[in-house]
Image 1 (cartoon, rainbow, N blue to C red):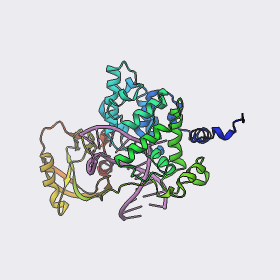
Image 2: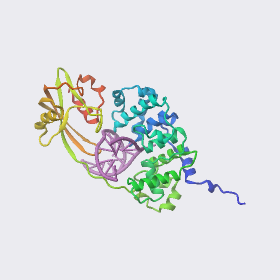
Image 3: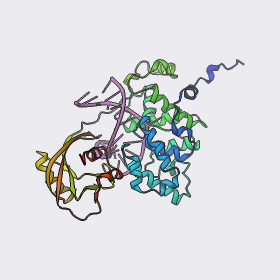
Image 4: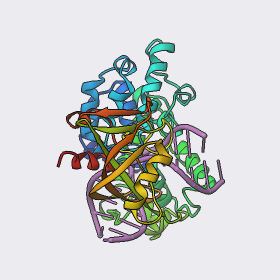
Length: 353
DNA sequence: TATACGTGGGC
DNA sequence: TGCCCAAGTAT
């Protein structure tokens, strides 16, 4: 009987695991094997770069070191810690989920994907990531990195953001999962996608999967993944009021759902023509505020995912302000206590100048 | 099933 | 400058 050659073990899984063991980046959550750290990092990393997440993760762990600490924190504290990270429903969902774990699950984070997925903010990807990385379960993950790696490696021509493409890729991810090593393998796949198999200019010459990728895909790598295109974003004109009375400015809290849910803002609204003519009307129709426009304070441009805005900012005098729990007079020095999106944080910087 | 949801960096 | 992209989820 012939002796098995080393090539016998030279599988996709072994190549990737071996490469990752030698080349993986040092990341703060990788020093913390506890499930809560994995959970928090996975939520923060959704649609967000590693370099952006690192300082937020470290600060978060100082403020909310355990599930119980997070469950006992206020929404305001949590949103303040999240400010600047974007997709703020992640923060509110994470806090809600922590309350469920602390209150209904004896403080124990579920090990299985079915129970994990019942928690707000945990979808198919995150459930697989927590189950495999934190608890050693044999569960696949499929994120943007894994989609790209597999789309190139297996020359997937179906759009990766179509239902058919997603189903195909989840099947591929499950079929290729090495039993007992799912956590390390999933991370290796994502690490490869992030550092070698990049969206643009993939570093194929130094890829550990080069031979098998070339053998299967034969030069189509740069054409993958295929994506359905998205539509263009509209551009809106807004007017915002810095309403000053008795040394304080008026802030409004946004509804808990939708854009910047639960965050605070300077009252503002969309205007059609000249912003200086439209500002008072916009604040009256949007907030029932009656104000008199004074001087212009500045202009803020911003691009959200689905639209762009140009915001004209005016100082205003209050004429009639309703009693409303979503409205609050704030000393300029205390504006930092109120979680805000980027646009309103910039406007806050204009106050007092 | 398509769309909404933030922000920052690269080219 | 403008567009693409990034460890997705909820509705």
